[in-house]
Each structure stands twice: as structure tokens, then as C-alpha cells.
Amino acid sequence: MNSKEYIESGQLELYVMGMLEPEECREAERMIALYPEVRDEVEQITKALKAYAEEEAGAPHPAIKPLLMATIDYSERLQAGEPQAFPPVLNENSTLADYAEWLNREDLRRPGDFTDLYAKIIGYTPEMTTAIVWINSMAPHEVHDDEYEKFLIVEGTCDILIGDKTYRLVPGDYLSIPLHEGHEVKVTSAVPCKVILQRIAA
Image (tube, rainbow, N blue to C red; front, side):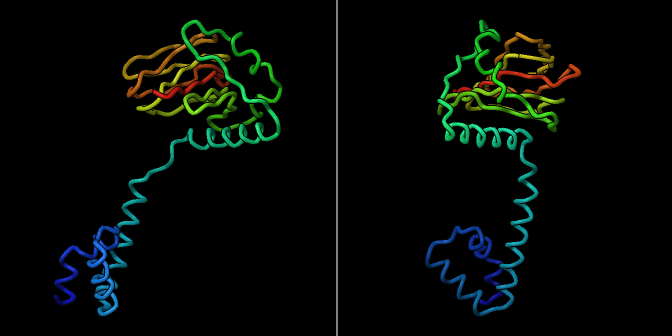
């Protein structure tokens, strides 16, 4: 097989993606070493696949960074000696008094300024994460397929849109988000909306 035939065979695309058998891989590497045009084609395929991956990846969800920072903060607090806590599971009968132990702590306050979201984790197990979360203006659209998300409003007000329904929430209100349902939060108060947020494995 000459270099033109080999380039047109589709083997180079499979080589770049790591999908060739060992013997086929050795043959591709032999062709790359023998023919500059084959080497150039590999470079072009690599660039095209990288550009495609970057285009498809998109920007990370805005909640990822605040929740990652909250996880680091929680780990550091535990290492510094804070005992592990097990906040109660949120339900329709939950009240703010159930979480007073954490809501009244001076070290679990938000900073004076933050962009969209700020969080402080107050309890973690592999099945459930509980956090105090402040939402400045909105939390963008997301869908949960493997965890239930529950809210208890502490301060401020917000609308939570689930599908085509809008739930107007004030302090003391509880809401559970169904699995597989797209939802977003829009703050309707002049101050950030402060919530107890719980995510529970489905």
C-alpha cells in the first residue's frame, strides 16, 4: 500500500484515537516514519480532533468552581479538628431551627462580595452532601440524573423554575427537585438568596 492509499484508508484516524490493534499500530508508525506526507496527515488529524474536542467541551458549569472550593474548605476544616457533622435530611417538615447549629456559626458566613454562588459545606457522606449556599442573582439551568436536590430557603427570595412551572419561595419554604427535570434558580430579592442545599444519591 502506498502513502496515498494508506492516508485514504482511515487507519490514521484510528491511530490518533488509539483504536488500532498492536500490529496495526506498528504498521501505522512504520508508515509515519517512511513517508513525510503520512506524518503531516497525522498532525492535521490530531489538530482537527483537538479543535473538535475543545469546541464540544464548552465552558464548565458555573456551580463547579464554588462547590469545588467549598469541598476544599470543608476538608481543611476537618483536618484542623472540626468534628464531622451529620445534618438532618431535608423534607417538607424541615425548619430553619433544624439547622440553627450551623446557621449561627460565625465561621459559616459568606464573604462581603462574590460573583454568582458561594457555598460552605456543613455535612458530607458518600450518599449526601449538605451545604449553606448563597445565590447572588441566579443559578443556571441544570439537570440531575443520579441525585436528588433539595432546598430550604433561609434568607431572601427566589423563583425556582422546573420545566414549565415556577415555584416562588420565601424563607422557610422547602422544595425538592425531581430527577431528570431541568431547573434553574432566579433570585427575586435585593439580597442574595441563602439556602440549605442538600444533594442525596438516588
